Image (tube, rainbow, N blue to C red):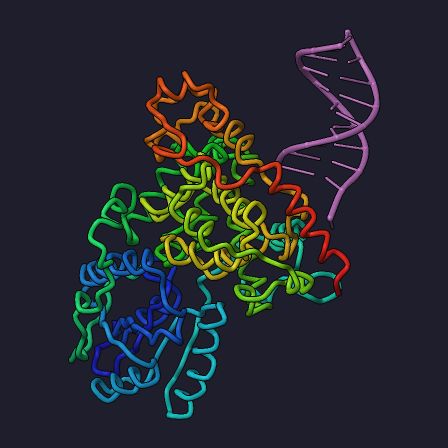
Length: 482
DNA sequence: CCATCTTTTCA
DNA sequence: GAAAAGATG
């Protein structure tokens, strides 16, 4: 390794808080120069936009874990706030560094920051190198036969499969040379990332361990215990049938490439399970492709006919939805899981989103914003693409007439009501026959369970059969719009 | 006639 | 995805 007397290389970390499979960090470390790992708290109106409160909690813990990882290999993590150009220029003056590496990001706020920043830094004499790392493939790699980005998942998936394995992940650096002088760093505690509501988020630690080690443990456990049978188990919200990797992916504590390659060469695991799981990685990839080529995916209907849709936007209904007080147990359980753990099972996300959009006729953007604020795994691509998918306004969207029946969905995927009982304790003693339809339970069954409808648990805020007809009629109105 | 399973149709 | 219509027994 070369001596560290040359000027240090800045490595700017964003949503890639990991040592392994980090191309910018590896390139800097391989150079032999000293490295200054940097995290910038960007102004709310740039960078990745204001983080939701759940993700602020995660970020706090993830940054602490990442700093410790860096310290274990002889380095550290510098915390700074401000406009990235100002911060980088300041650190350059403090340390003599004129080289910066980072991993590329693909969300519109990120690219809107990084492209002009790169130019401004180069104009000032900086060497700027950016690397891939957030996705399996660059979003400019796969195009359909007419030369445009894919708008349908299945052909996208086929192209992804046909395009060969993503590049193998690279190892973490064993040592990172420290600079002769560290630049000033801010106190992470003073960023006040942790929620001010003392009770909220306290239960997050029941299930989450932010950081690269937590991500690696989760992946290993998933592959050992859960991947076999994933195809069917992933739809049962009461079971631990999903990977729970999404928040780790959202913060880049693990790369999709690492996950993809971890599912190779598993001789004892059914191929169907592996393919189904990889398709979930591909949905993330597909969403990023959509977002990259449609930067307003989170704000504007991809299908412009929906611009004229007459949403009802009843504030009382919206509030009851957020609180898990709709009177439909599977919806309420999901919304309360979200509040308690910053997470909701994928199957239930679809049911809860369908209920907001199609039963309550509330604009999908309000649901998207709520999820963005409360999910630890909120992702600008997946969240926007998935909400539009449920609304029917997005790419490869579910058809207008796909309206989830919350009772039937509950009975199909939570047959014993275990999931409902876990998150809606006031229904815990209700006979499983009525757990998804307490409003149809005979009075003695309610009495035996200590339930007074409208008192201890709400009556449905809307009749589903009525709401279904109303939604079909509303969608009919925009059917022939241009 | 009902009960159950299968297919069709819905914006 | 689910309600309605059709087929089966």
